[in-house]
Length: 57
Image 1 (cartoon, rainbow, N blue to C red):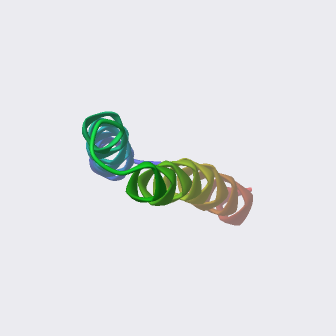
Image 2: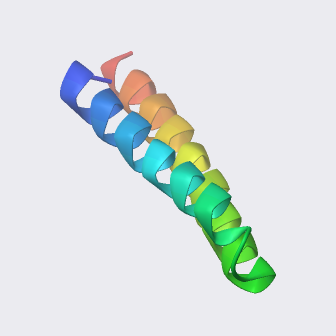
């Protein structure tokens, strides 16, 4: 994975984590949604990394 794509996944994951932390005080269901989006984003980053590594080999 190139650096810009890795940075994109890192920044978007941090945005989702920050949104989760902020929304914990306001609405639990919204915090749960942001948490699921954060975990999905991290998982998607690993999937993209694995596919790119597999296509190079």
